[in-house]
Image (cartoon, rainbow, N blue to C red; front, side, top):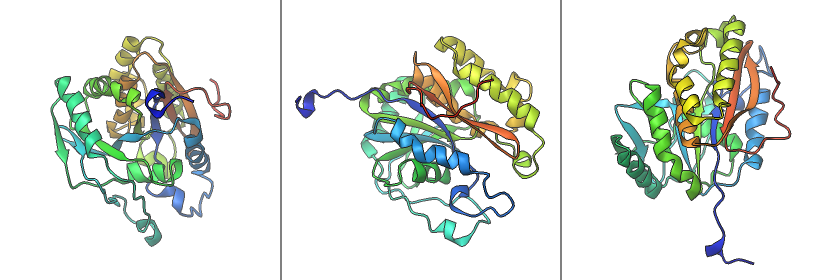
Length: 285
């Protein structure tokens, strides 16, 4: 048996995951009790499909800063940045440790690519981090660093950041983007976006699946020009985390690993460099 020093670290995939609506997986929804079932089941089963990481770098839709910013708190608290939900959802716990060394590595890689960075020693994990990870890795025993979005939400800047961070994948770090491939609050409450969300999801799936990274980047940079895109994303913060994971993918191909719907609006998850799931239940178009 090889010694631990000679065991190679598998190259980690990158993931773009939906985090649902607030603490949606941890409460009852009397009007539509099964709205979040498929998404929740997908997240609960995802850990078995991914090599266990040494650490995670998570890019959440719910943190923006003037420059790319990383958390350096070794014991990050939770930020309950959702409002009006049942009292018990503010008692959730996810005591995953931080990783200041990884945070420094992230800053070094981004800095080497000419991207300005800063560190935040106080910030904890927002719900874009702890809500989905409570399902994917409920033991909360994998160290996590959170990376902010950059104000202005420029797609090219976030793709560039992903390119710079791709080396982490060979160091046992799972890069996770947490957002929603459809994010229009009117759609979540009232529906009516079936056509535009389906149209945009088909385009997004084709962009992710591009075999040439340059072509993929070019498509993703111009996402807002796609018919229906701005109906699906009146503001881009829930889509932009995808750009980081797509940039970090390098030459690895992308694929859809979940398709579900909320009030008729299509919501998908994507991976790069992950072996196909036999149970993914993703419809073909």
